[in-house]
Image 1 (cartoon, rainbow, N blue to C red):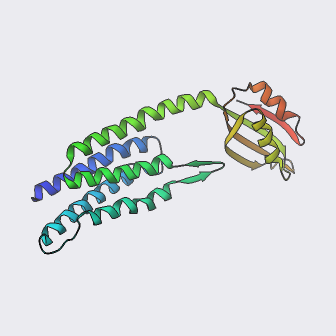
Image 2 (cartoon, rainbow, N blue to C red):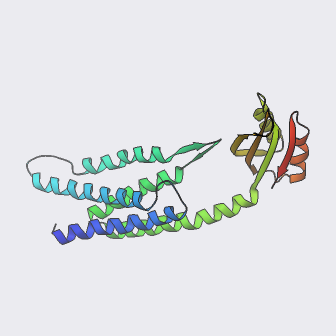
Image 3 (cartoon, rainbow, N blue to C red):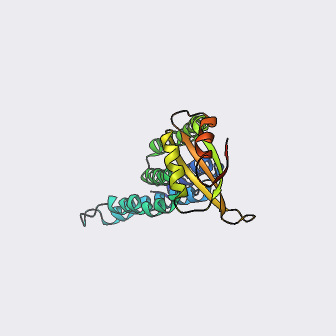
Length: 220
């Protein structure tokens, strides 16, 4: 491989990783522009190095050039695990972790010289992340409810609220709790609820308002 070919592959990996990273950065995700560029560039370099090492020992050993590149696929799992977080009752970061894994694959493809595959994969990833994210946000906006509770801070209160919501076919997606500093023994709870059964806000308020220790209920 000539030096110009090497530079082309490294530069192209930066561009393709940057395209996917830009989409993640625009949505303020954990792994943004810089992370995706570095993953793609590093994967490309390792793939080029794997091929170069094999060419240097070709005919003298039965070394497998894919072994070095294969470590990228398993090693990227560490970054992916770091991107996955638990927020309240919800697990987030799965798409970001999958994105890093695909970006590593794009880098390997560029390093191996499969430009068409790398370009087409990048286009598909960008379209998938952009288009499906908008569709998902639109659908979830129609199905989601935000429930604001002002209630007593007592053991088992959240469990009672959860059971009440489940009886109406509502599922809690995330929970935020903070203490009420102005009055002792009270707290504020903000629930992001998936309204699977299309329950009416009025019915939700009525069900929650009669619970023991409930001061006020608001649904938006």
